[in-house]
Structures are given as C-alpha cells and as structure tokens.
Length: 212
Image 1 (tube, one colour):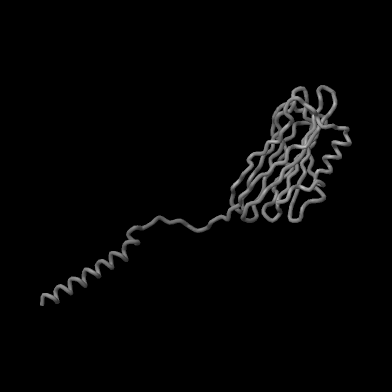
Image 2 (image 1 turned 180 degrees about the horizontal axis):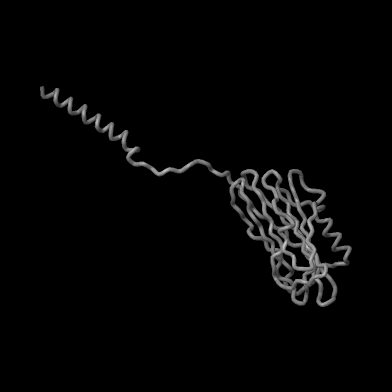
C-alpha cells in the first residue's frame, strides 16, 4: 500500500495555519496516538475492530483537537462503523470528512474531534473505535496519520503538530469449510483384516494340497 498522499492532510494543515499554531517546543513528551492492535489475523467475511487513544498530554496543557486519518485498500476491506465509534467527551464535536484525493484502489476517512463547549482533556483516554469487514484474502495495510492541538491552560496560546504515521497490518485468511467427524478405527482396519484372512485361507489350502 502506498503512503498517504500529502493532500490528505491539507485540511489539517489549513486548521493549523489558520489558527496561528506553531510547532510546540515542550520540554516533555508530545501527545501520542496509540493504536490497538497493530497486527491482526482474521478470516474473510468476518469483522475486526481497532481502537485509538491519545496519551502523553503535556503538563499544564489541555487537548482541544484530535484528528485521525485512515487509508486502506478498498478491495480487501470495508469500513462498517464510522463516526458512531467516536468517544469524544461531552461538549466536543465529532465529525467525519471524506478526503478528496486518495490513491487509486483505496478508501479513506478523516475523523475529527474538536472542543466546543466542553472541557479541555488533560488525561490519557480512548477517542475512537472503528470496525472493518474483511472482503478477500491476503495481507493488507491500514495507514494511519492525523494531528493534535493543545492549549496552555487556562487561556494561553495553542500549539499543534501531526501524529507520527503508523500502520496496522491485517492478514485475512480464507475460511475453511467442511464437517469434522471422529475416526472409526474399525472401518480403517477392516480392509487389512480381510486381506489377512484371505492370505491365511490361501496358505491353509496350499498346505493341505501339499500334504496330499
């Protein structure tokens, strides 16, 4: 799977530039996007879920925006749950955007959760759960990108930056049909018992004729 095209992040960059954001220079770790799981093995025609959390919000800051972009091969899987899987806090607005430019043979969704009348988030938490349905066998990759925005509390400046790009590897295996039955040892041995009996009978006849 190719990497996400830069145009997929145009909306995010416009938000960052239009808000006058700058790349933060925190002395502590920056917010991280945690994806679980990052490797999945599942059967064709079944579903699987992926959860997204944000951790390591800098001390003294509050998270005010989370953006998550997903890109996957359209022939291998389909998204069956979208924005309803968002778990934004009260007073936040979850929205779903369809990127306008994506690689051929791919599908993409841009999940955005932004503060409205709610509180800034200062703790680690889960933000999104998505469910996919497998369409065909073979390994495939879900590419993940996005971004975040924080504010210096209580009413200070805002800062934002993209998340590190990530991948989820999905191995779709074809389901195997059929019915399993217990082994009947007698049925297996019957041909060999019959053969042994036939050999014994022939040997007996041969011995009798030889004695005569």
